[in-house]
Image 1 (cartoon, rainbow, N blue to C red):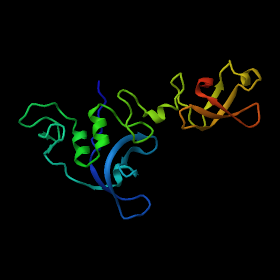
Image 2: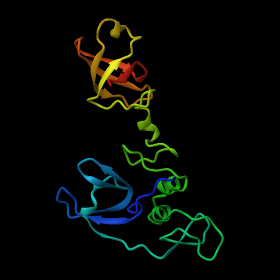
Image 3: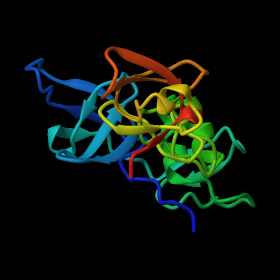
Image 4: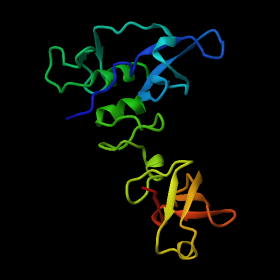
Length: 199
């Protein structure tokens, strides 16, 4: 079953700024649930707000002429109006109307925003390629603060330094995590293939 696209995506909103600036304006490109905050909306200008901050949003017209076929589609359902065409996701129509073409194409391809950022993940994936690199071979993400155990095949494990805490995570293609070991002083860099999350 296809994942439903949040109805906020593609809407141009006007919101109170949490730091006291009069207001911020932008188009919603991501809507995700965050622990402690509920639904968090990410705008195309990088701002992060919650729905209660929104005091106004532009009304959605009844139809929009998409560049996909150069004919009108219903903005609520995505259905073609008086022509034969596919149903275009309403979020894609809203995003295109606001000039967010990268996000529009991603929605047309069936992709959804990454759970860690506003980039769009490959179809069927939860994370974009950038954040997917931080996931180990066993599918476990190594975030800062995780307790991990080194792989039994490593020299450090043989020397008794089996457990540690993730100190930082590299954003390079090498999938490196910096682990502060319990038994040895200092920290050690290890590839995610050398570590796995402690059960």
